Image 1 (spheres, rainbow, N blue to C red):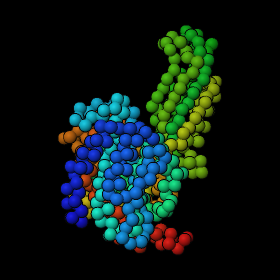
Image 2: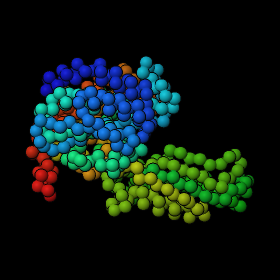
Image 3: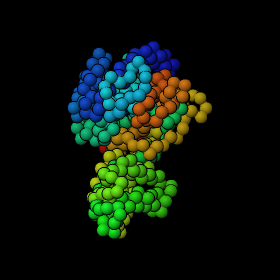
Image 4: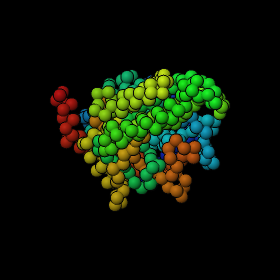
Length: 406
């Protein structure tokens, strides 16, 4: 193991330089042409053949020295439509776009890990599928799946990771079961009848109705769904009206429903279906009409028990300090969930919060940044995690099932 850690240390300057270059040139989802081009060129210099998927996705195979299962390693590439406020030498050069979630680091980490794995491909008892995915922020994974990323060759297991500013540097989050929330995004149009605020009886007030909606839907979290099943309803946008003395014709609301369990229409909880019922009932009570649209953006991310145990064993090598491993869970969502819903997988969190370097801002904040040395731990988890997987693949029940065709 130490020789791998030493090799990562040798490549650290390259790792940082790549991450900073990606950070300076952020690209939105399905627009990552420059990023994809750099990824392709880097992988090709390693002797790997690359393939494009869904416009800007890049896939390559590392074929090991022995036959065996196929492990997929994934990094996301897209940035966010935000104006960066960090004053650093590698600040975004693209107005209104920045890497505020760490995807620049994810790409750099997987590229360096690919270099080390290619150098050790004779030790690999199978095949590694490297996947650089576009548009994670708006559910890009399902497009890659529909394009066949889990086939040819068929993927047996997946591993992913996220650099995480909600966890201090030097720690790692590894947990089995649900680790990131499902996400439904809603828009509500509350339609009333406008008029004068001095004669509200002649109008149908959509503002009062909207206020009641915002308060009443919170009953889902405490009165209809068990507190043991995390559910959060949040409103992020409210708009309506033109002047304080005018009752508007309508009010628009937008927000999210997040849940850390299977929350679809076939589940017992059905948070979104309950939400719609409550909204419609309140609008009817206020004599308002309503239009509700819901986009089912991400399903919950659920880690496989056996893959999590493997990741935990690898983490104990990379993070030997006591209490460095946490059972981290979050109601933030991740489209890596689409992969783990189809293939046994694990998603881990690399802590990067360090107040001394200003890397303790939340993800999606204009001042988001990372503690760059923690990227070395991310590379190590990719490399050692992959090697551990192939070394122990014969002990995994789902590998045996795949071999037997069951």
